Image 1 (spheres, protein in one colour):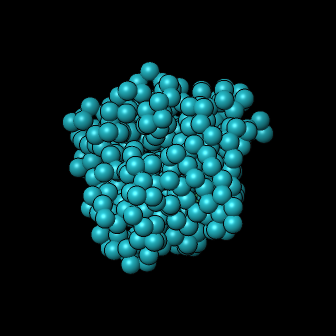
Image 2 (tube, rainbow, N blue to C red; image 1 turned 90 degrees about the vertical axis):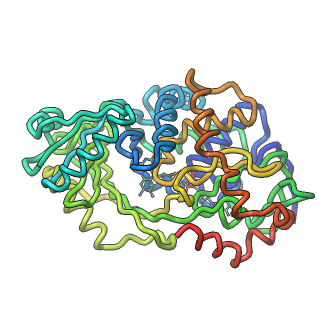
Image 3 (spheres, rainbow, N blue to C red; image 1 turned 180 degrees about the vertical axis):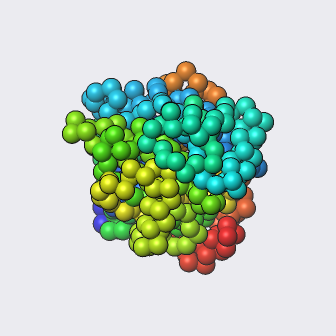
Amino acid sequence: MSSRACDVLVIGGGIIGLTAAWRALEAGASVVVLDPAPGDGATHAAAGMLAPVLEAGFGEPGQARLGTASLALWPAFAEALEHAAGLAPGAVGLETTGTLAVAYDSDDLVAMRRMLALHREWGLGSAEITPDEARHREPAVGQRLAGAAWVPRDHRVDPRAVHGALAAVVAARGTVVRRAAVSLTWAEGTVVGAVDEAGDGYAAGTVVLAAGHASGTLFAGAPTRPVPGTTLRLDAAADRSPAVVVRGAVQGRPVYAVPRAPRSDGRREVVVGATSDEREDDHLTRAGDVFALLRDARAFLPGLDDAVLVETTTRSRPGSPDNAPLLGRAADGLCLATGHHRNGILLTALTAAAVDRALGVAPVGSQAAEAVEAADQFADPRRFVDTYASADTYMSADTYTSADTYSTTRGGTA
Ligand SMILES: Cc1cc2nc3c(=O)[nH]c(=O)nc-3n(C[C@H](O)[C@H](O)[C@H](O)COP(=O)(O)OP(=O)(O)OC[C@H]3O[C@@H](n4cnc5c(N)ncnc54)[C@H](O)[C@@H]3O)c2cc1C
């Protein structure tokens, strides 16, 4: 058993944990990241839609505000990351070309129009267009279409490329230890470090808990749950696949296709997704999910029939009781960056701004103050800490790792 000291210990090396680690390095901190499999969580499955408009949900205006604020930061975030990683501009695949929303039958169109009315009410910017206009904008769209809408401000990025760039920066300037944290270390109500699965200890001035859906197993005040989802990766001829994100519903079932830029061989990756379940995290892909996703995607995009199915990926989104993220200080010495659920790629840029503020780093992007204000208002972790982890249980790490505490937490989120 050994022990190591650092300024900032980040638990979890997904897109969120590595973003926190990068920003801490920018602050001049010494940084250690603990993760047995960095990048193999939800980040590995994510399609990369940056979609505050089409992800806006009835009764969730706060999340729309978080998403909109984060989207505004993405161009500066991508540019700064590419620069830090020594990559060419555009390497992380940020594309600001808008999104086509589609409805398969008349019931799907009714639902879509309800959603467009919500966008109007919240000033989000979307417009119904005719099926002919939709096919003009995106020629890969087929004939079976009851209606469509154009959403100019929903964009996309390549999550694996973003994670790769973050991993390169963190590996060059920090330390990544491929082990799981098993408990936080507490001293008189303050988090002072963590212990890994080999029994080695880490002493840190600040611990950032970013372990995705598993965050709740280390701290009950981060009541996360797994929300498994499946995406498929296709290799498609560029002229038989969409050039913009196409998403909609087929008889009530949501489906999307997210294209990457074409390669020099005239083909491109298209990510088709996604299912969403409330069950344990098992990384197993159900045959019926693959069937349903392909059936629904080809209803809008018949050219995908010729594509090669390259990969099926099932990972779990980190859900929270209200499905909004937990960003910021939760106890002395402990910062949470988790619970990003289905919009963690979108919310990465806002998370960076929140970490910058917490660590006193110059923020990336001129609208960072607005993003931090939105995070304070809608993502403050203290909304759960008081309910799920009372002050007298802060004293012992064992409290947070006991099965009883965890299952109580899960029960509250069902
Ligand atoms: C199918 C699917 C599609 C999605 N599509 C989109 C999309 O289009 N747009 C969008 O914005 N979002 C999307 N998301 C959501 C997004 O992927 C997540 O919100 C985001 O990746 C969360 O990042 P994270 O770093 O918090 O979690 P993760 O990527 O899950 O990373 C958590 C990390 O913590 C590590 N870890 C776990 N336990 C421990 C421990 N005890 N000690 C140390 N490390 C630990 C894991 O190994 C993992 O690497 C999608 C998610 C899914 C599943």
